[in-house]
Image (cartoon, rainbow, N blue to C red; front, side, top):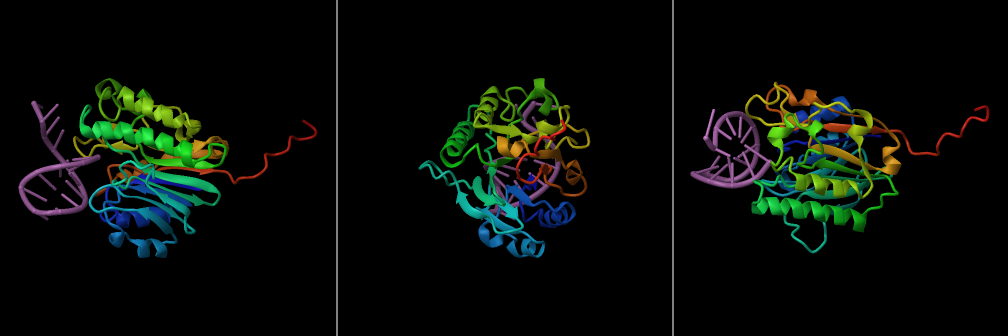
Length: 267
DNA sequence: ATGGTTGCTTAGCAA
């Protein structure tokens, strides 16, 4: 199974790129963030022609998340359903081919200390609680999306300069560790260890051609899924050219589920 | 120096 996640920064503005990317890379599942359209404006028909069914949690202007798959995503849940503020469309969960998939758009956080910052920290705490309440780390689970947090210094172009900002602050890094502590592995780091692998570059200051980015888009996998991970990466190429999203798609590939190979009797 | 770019909605906000 090839699983991908992409913050498209408006599915309307990115529709042509999205369709081209799907045709070329043909993932089994694609999680989207920042749709920025209501359900009436979501391109269901074009995606259907491209061979994908979509489950969406949409809202006008801001936010919006989706899960695309070859077959209709099942058992769809939208929002946390925890009695808290679910007015921002930032979370959708669905089952695809035996894997529970979550597409998450963690709040950016505005400025440290602001109301948005408090909302971000609270939202990340609620995500951890949602996982505990609604998911099973002993089953195949992929938590995908724009986390708006870089996990480690090697995920940041200039860690000293970014230290303490909303994307690389000790409090949100700790909140991310709490989420990972549910039993989730960072699939990219199962495969690659080097610094300089980024998924987001600011539109300004020629950040992309200078590779001044951060890795804030993640595919986290529970142990039963992570042990089947055979590849992971970031499609930096999609960030090139005219009017890209400011995020590149990230992906992970998993071997089919099945019994472990029996040890050879001659071993 | 709080700049710069893009997108949504139409001057200001969000990222």
